[in-house]
Image 1 (cartoon, rainbow, N blue to C red):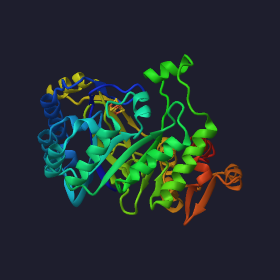
Image 2: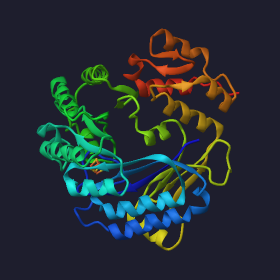
Image 3: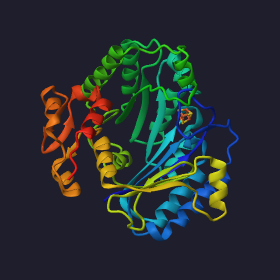
Image 4: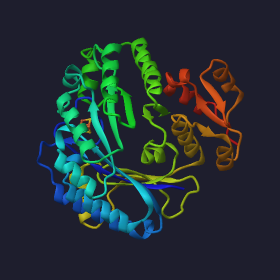
Length: 387
Ligand code: SF4
């Protein structure tokens, strides 16, 4: 079993109108020192439970982790490394907003052990960035990408988004073309989704946010897969494309249902520290950063909830996550873990219609299946036969 640590930095300069992550727009007034101290204490609180776990990856996500200094990030990395059993080469990723890092900071982040950058570009179109309420401009993104290369990172991801109001396939194609100019080895291409508790959610429910129709979105999604495949990237997850060997190891942990410890406000964990359930345990931290810090600094666990998974929940998680992956779900290991042939004859229609396929003893979504993945994953879950 592989193990990784996620560190959540919940602060952003400004809240984007589409974002429902646990993030807070606070300008530059960030309680960096107190928050870092709380994360360090939280790591200490898990010392006995994680000191023998082999560490594969660390991921700083947010929010905007690049608002923190390299010094604070370095302290957290060092503490994690001395509290676990790191493997020889571990992946250490950090999410960067292009407006919040310069060459000097990027070099300093590299010096403290960050070896993979994930850049929230979203688009190279001024029009799209304005609609998305982003603080970064296309020039900010170009500059930070050039600085990342100058700082010596050869492993970096670009986050891009499509499906914005009045977006055409041509506009999206331009974004992809520009992304490839940086010779990145990883691209995440997400379709804009409208979440209820956001500014976009409110606008959409009032009919004030026009979006491309379903056919247009399917056109963009299909184009993305074909275009990036021709450029040498493999769609190893529904929204993630990488050159061979450059898949994000940390995100693979989530999709493969492996173990991770989440630190910081609102972070989720999937790890059975006390061997209480053969199907896994998950928990989440308190979302409010102030409450999180206060609770940890008082020497208490900042837990919002803990749940022991049942076999059915573990099985559904496996399907929901596993079918997102290009490698699919290996039927032999699935059978060993869950002890049953698990899909019923009702799935045969989905095979016949070309939405699912079997390859190398694994169950996969086809290219056609990826276009309707959410619906399909629900149908596969509904077709389970429990023994
Ligand atoms: S920068 Fe990222 S995390 Fe922060 S509000 Fe915008 S989308 Fe959300």
